[in-house]
Image (cartoon, rainbow, N blue to C red; front, side, top):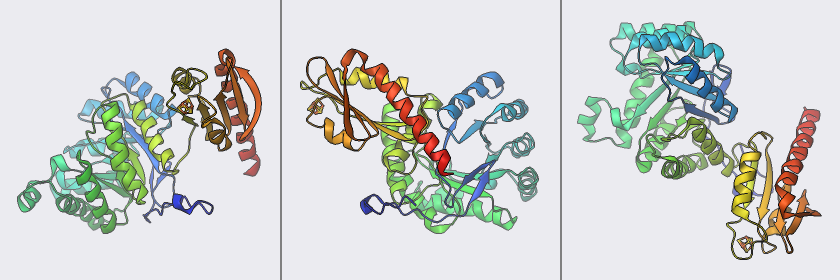
Length: 373
Ligand code: SF4
């Protein structure tokens, strides 16, 4: 995957995993790496939860997870699933009944650890409900909630304990002839997460859900996730990702996509290349980029735009982008199309003009892609 014959230094060799389905979204194998997020509304508040799911889906989320802590939430889940444009994963902890109810309510996947839901009979009932309703399972090992016997054995949460926990849960599913599962081994510590993920990636061919749990707020959590998930994805590990932020789920989706875009693993929307600006800038780069990020949110077509303050780097960056603008003198700059200088444009009209150019290019790329199909 991601083979680049011209620039082999960009290649990422993805770990071979088996493919499962989460509703209509394939996860693992050669499927695109799926981006997930989780709602933070009360699940019983159906309208608010559906609105959040829709906003996340609009931002590009492929799959959304919803907490199901009680029976009222299971009931609400049914309506949420009906209204959702993307598959819904039900987040279940300990209560096996919630697992069964969520499968019956139409959840596409249960996030549940089969070793933590009681005796064998209960485990079998949940697996049966999942099987009967075409529901996959995510085993979610978390360093903060490792089983007691593993903490006693290893003394503290460590990669080996997390891998062993994951394999114990996997064994329960396999013993019940259930193979539609993916697995995560999350920790809030980047080193622990990365080591645990490498261990589990070697020990199983199940698709892997990546995440750095409780990563923090928008800035710190983004950086932590970019380092942790970025390194693993670069190694070829990861079939679906969730960036956990103490922020709006839409931000999680945006950050997830930015991580995948940075590694050339997935493309969506306008990739803006912009300079930090300095005394040489021919227009206000920072304000312009802020305005363009907002004005171009509706573009889903993968394409690139360079917004560069002056000719030091402008023409060079514009060479490699679909649309470009480079600041010049006397209140105007140069517009580049497909890498070539095209025409001048005054600074005070350039935002509207660039939006127009990007929309035009996106429409061209879309019709070319349609014609190629
Ligand atoms: S491209 Fe020009 S304006 Fe932008 S940071 Fe470099 S020198 Fe400054």
